[in-house]
Image 1 (tube, one colour):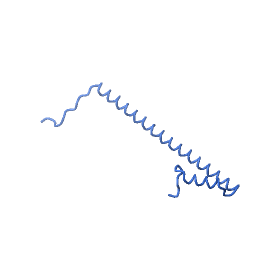
Image 2 (image 1 turned 180 degrees about the vertical axis):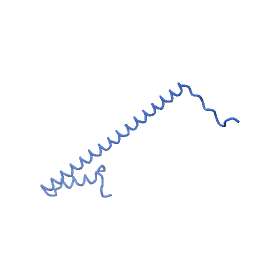
Image 3 (image 1 turned 30 degrees about the vertical axis):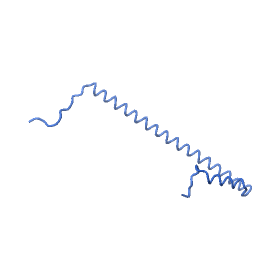
Image 4 (image 1 turned 45 degrees about the horizontal axis):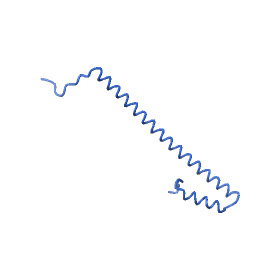
Length: 93
């Protein structure tokens, strides 16, 4: 009795070598994509940190003005502007 199924294709050395090269190219491409993704992620986080530092500096300035002069119109306007700023993260939500 004979064996069932298809006979394995005899691949020559060139075919195996080309498959190996293609696999290596795909691996390098995936690695490049991973690094691009990580660079984008780090860049986004750095932008968020800069924005938070800016907001912190604005709040420090307001607090210093309050400590020196009490509540004045300029501070009220700054607080209103800061409250209405869409880039400010609302921590009460």
